Image (cartoon, rainbow over all chains, first blue to last red; front, side, top):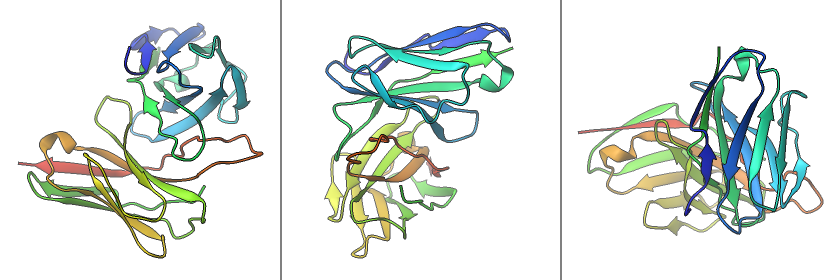
Length: 115
Length: 116
């Protein structure tokens, strides 16, 4: 597709369950980012990938959160043993390279609701 | 990355110019000014960026003061579809040797409401 694609668009889960969120970046984009946005709040950075490596994981809130990227393409964000405070919109962005002039293109996000 | 200050909200009449200010008094010489916006229930959308010269594209104009301590995003003819949260972000051009390449630090932004 032409843009960043995220799936599912909405996810409702029960507290304690694991969830996987998927991001398909724009083809050829080497940099990929995950952000979280709680209701009424700004975006919080979670993790950055350059290729399949993650040089910056500083935003992951706990060891229940992990992410991987394969084939320098698709990325999956996994949240284990979900808690109610994990409820948020999870946004993925990609860019052609991370240096100067970098423009990040965002997907529409996955809205996660933990009951 | 330098901190930015934006008014929490602004109003604009449809068809008029919307001028959104941003203060970034601690900006460093290698930091760019980026503007993104987020329309309700969508992901952020890139608008424009600049280093020190004024910039214009099909969406907006960016005016950066000579001392680079502040900037203004101008939407020349606002429409109802421009109602959104507008984020001003300053970020290093690159971070050689570091790990935080390119991440964007979002503040609270300015809620722009365009009314008929």
